Length: 560
Ligand SMILES: *[C@@H]1O[C@H](CO)[C@@H](O)[C@H](O)[C@H]1NC(C)=O
Ligand SMILES: *[C@@H]1O[C@H](CO)[C@@H](O)[C@H](O)[C@H]1NC(C)=O
Ligand SMILES: *[C@@H]1O[C@H](CO)[C@@H](O)[C@H](O)[C@H]1NC(C)=O
Ligand SMILES: *[C@@H]1O[C@H](CO)[C@@H](O)[C@H](O)[C@H]1NC(C)=O
Ligand SMILES: *[C@@H]1O[C@H](CO)[C@@H](O)[C@H](O)[C@H]1NC(C)=O
Image (cartoon, rainbow, N blue to C red; front, side, top):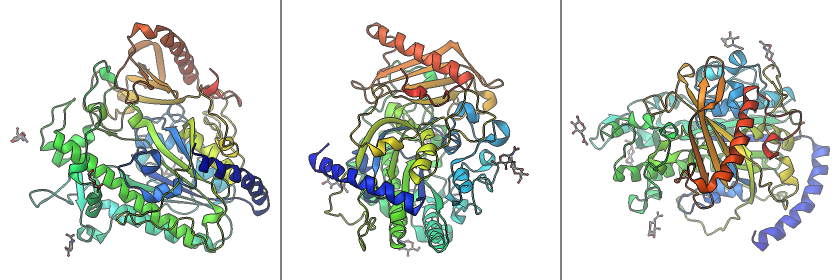
């Protein structure tokens, strides 16, 4: 840690003490919970020097920035249901988009529902719960929300033919940089989301009592329907391919995701890419990367508008801000695109948590915490990177962490079988990491993820099999220095994994292989490592089968 930042943190320790007293006397913090869709940590504050994200970076400079945060399943519906209920996919029993946990698994209390039960006004804007069956076609209203969740009208055009192709005609393309004034309704969903969220902040200011406002941005999810000017930030000649654009030798075919949703877009269809391994022509790969980065800058601009409004309304000093994503996105690494896998590029997410007075000095009177930064006008201001937290954390940890930091009691740890328990968490509160900035992360900590497949080799539905078609489950353990994934037979009727029927295994030692390109599972040299890990995962899965993840307060994920 650079000494200037360290000095600042010594100062902040004093502030923490004052702040704790402050909370006792002034009550609870409001929560602004921002979720981006399909965003991996390709943002400035995570060390990406190419991507322009000044507003998120500014938030990070006043926050704890979690560098090892992982989603429990790298696809929208299952990940969102998992982190909003603080239960793993084996407890929500949602691996596709087609069931509602309250009916299909258990009547679990969600994060916003918990805040609502504690007297908060809870509000949802955009994509927070996965829409449709997964949230009973209501975004879990009225259980989770005080008012009807908001959906931007312009989202109705998201999948229509609105992208101008090289032929001048309109298509359902992947690459969809548009002139916003030519769009139906002359706006885009995330712009409408920001406007609505600002409107709700204004009305919350007029209302007594704390609020929990969740804002779910739709980008950088495909199609890349974004204002065309953001492409200018990323000239094509400056784009590079992924460092490892080929499918790695030694990758079990069951681990590979064939990015079917990308192939279905008209501009990609026209390329006649071979199934399942491709590749996409290099020139087009560069353009996908360019559009993804531009979409990230577009989201950054929305976050900037939202935070500056929070600030202008005088709410920043009483509001904690969480910024995260449901999972990552492969940008050509391993010859893959999209999410749908256990690779880090799919499971790792940004997680930035700002608690006023705790992660940043209290605001001086008249001082702006979040002035809007125009990404098109280079700024000379140097932002600190925020406080880097290296602990392995999971999105199921959010529920207890956000509760505790806002001033509520965190939910209790789930018992051995928790289907019948409404309020409990399979995560761990990270709040202690905020109070002791100098403590070292536990190197034994791990994060779990999993991904289902319908077959051992890639087919059309491998990215997103229906529950009834799942035959294999890949359970992953991610520690700070390795990832181990065990692919085993899974029975969707009984929700049981057969740990002795192994379909494939992957082991990556990340110090030498941070991109996860060399599956060393069969490498004898590492036999001892494998024996240790295998025992751990078998033990873990037998826990999973009986849903014994957390045993009355003991932290399973750090025991070994
Ligand atoms: C589910 O829980 C909610 C409160 O969290 C309760 O209002 C509702 O009646 C419960 N539904 C069932 C079917 O038990
Ligand atoms: C799901 O929505 C339907 C239709 O609004 C409603 O009748 C049903 O009670 C809801 N399910 C639950 C568990 O609340
Ligand atoms: C965007 O569309 C409007 C309306 O068609 C047009 O006047 C404007 O010149 C376009 N802008 C760009 C940059 O193409
Ligand atoms: C593109 O790359 C050139 C050469 O490295 C650099 O000078 C320029 O600033 C880059 N452009 C952008 C918009 O990042
Ligand atoms: C793709 O295949 C179609 C039909 O087989 C053919 O007409 C077209 O020229 C091919 N396009 C490319 C880019 O190879």
